[in-house]
Image (cartoon, rainbow, N blue to C red):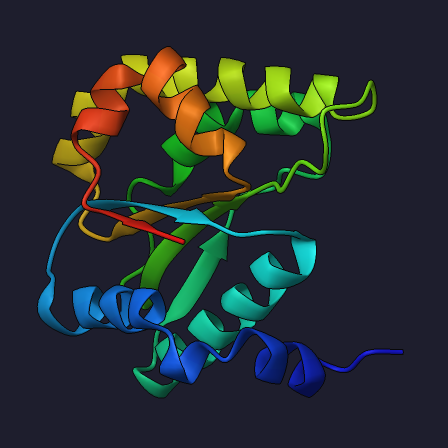
Length: 164
C-alpha cells in the first residue's frame, strides 16, 4: 500500500513551480480568486488537497470541500456553493474536485456532470465573485480545462490561475 509520503515524494510539490505559484497566490492574494488545478489522477488531487490543508492549517485556516461523491452532486456544485458564500472566517479556500479517468463509458456521467456543474456556475459567476472573499479551486484532469472553456466561458475568463 502506498502511503501519503510516497505520493508526496512522487509529486514533489515542494519543487513544483506550479505549486509555488499556487502558494504565492495565498500569500499575496486577498479576496476572490478562481483557480483551476489540473492533475493527472486521483492520487495527484489527494496529495495536493492534503498539502493545501496542511498549508492552510499552519495559517489557522481550513479547506472547505464541496461534496462531489456522485455525478449528481458534482452537477449541482454551484448550488452546493451557495450556502457557503458566508463561509466561516477560518475558511481559507473552497475545493471542488473530481478527476475523471479515461474516456470510457464509466467516465461519461462524470464528464456530463462537470459540464452541467460548470454551466450552472457560469450563470452565477458574478454573484459568486462579489460574495466570496476566498479562492475557489476547481480540481480535475486535463479535460476540465476544455469543459470550462466550452461550457463556462465566463468562468474561464475570470480565472486567476491555471496550475498543472
